[in-house]
Structures are given as structure tokens and as C-alpha cells.
Image 1 (cartoon, rainbow, N blue to C red):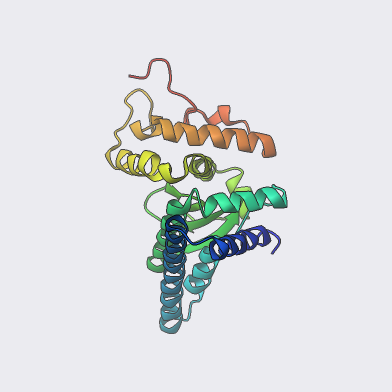
Image 2 (tube, rainbow, N blue to C red):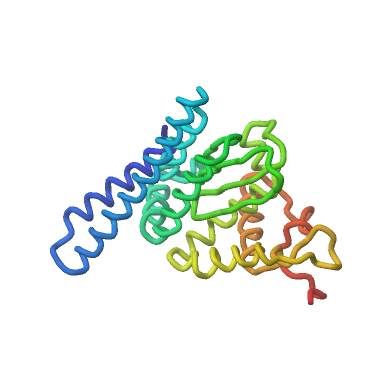
Length: 254
């Protein structure tokens, strides 16, 4: 519960600020923006819960319902490695500077949860992970602090062990740093280009298993953020795996 208190505090502060803003065109714009923002977030959660209730009635499984609630809770979840005040600050960033990807990420995870059966939701490091298991492909999608990871099998360990030893999970977590840095510019400068790049990626001839997408600046930036974070807190040596998740382009890259 302690990881949610800073996030709840953040939302309360935003509500208070919006309520006491002096009357002006700017303050009305802000109030309107947050009214629709909260309406969209609640609507997405409601649809996720509705899909979960329907699956519960039809199949007896509560997985989708509980996952929908946990995904919504991700809006308030913060990193337990940070102080209370810094967690509140990061929460403010999430619901102001990162407002568009926070909304889109929440909607995306609720949708994925509603239409996929084998999954689990995990909180880690201030981010919310929806892991889709037994998939035909292995990939990840990061939108703000909401991360969707596809894996070909099922998770066999606790999530702390999974993420601190799984490069795909660490890489996707690395994107959250650029989301926080770029804010409202993240979707047009990283989100959309990354989507196009991943869809049009081609194999790199001189390195087996690598795609042109892996050498895009935003992908390597995520690797560098992850390398620093996991070295600091877990002494993880990223260089051992740099041929799979590069930190920079090789000198002979065409």
C-alpha cells in the first residue's frame, strides 16, 4: 500500500490545484483538460472491469477483472526506491508532462487485457506491466509507465527475479526514462517513429538475430537508461549482452 500513497497524494494535489485556480481562460482550459483526462481514464477502467465481469459470468475466471483493477491502480503506483517527496514529484510528472502517454498507455493495457486470456499484471519500479504469456512472438510495447510484454512461455519465477534477469523487460523499462524526459513530445518523437520502425524493420545482415529497429536512437537510448539503472541497483553488467541490446551503433554500421 505504501507504494500507492504518493500517487494518491499526487492526484489529490492536482484536484485541489484545479479547484482553486483563479478564473481565467488558461485555468478553464486546464480544468477542461483534466475533466476529460479523468473521464477517459475512468471510462477505460470501467470498460476493462465490464469485460472482466462478462468473462467471470461466462467462464468463471476472475483474471481479467482483477487485472483491469490492477491496471487502473497503476496510475497511482510509484517506485519504492525513491523518497516520498520524489515519488510525489514523479507522480505529478506522470499526470501533467506525461499526460498523453499515461492516458494512452492505460487505455492500451486495458484493451490488451480484455482481449487476451493468458496474462498477468505486475507492478515494478513505478511501472505497470501486462505480461501476455504463450504468445507466438516475443516483444514489448512501452507507453509512459504502462508496459506490455509478449513472451512465448509463462513466467516461472517471481517478477523481481524476472525483470532483473530479463533483458526485454529491462529494455522496455528503459523507455520510461525517455517518456519522463520528453513528456508531451514522447509520442510524436519516439512512440510513432518506434511503431513504424518496428513494423518495417529488416534483418541486419552482419549480425544474426538483430534488426534495423534495434539500432534506432530511441531503442539504444532505452538500453542506456536501463543499463545505468540496473547497474546502480542490481550491479547488472549490460556490456555482456550488448550484442543483443546495443548501447551504440558499431563503428562499421552502414
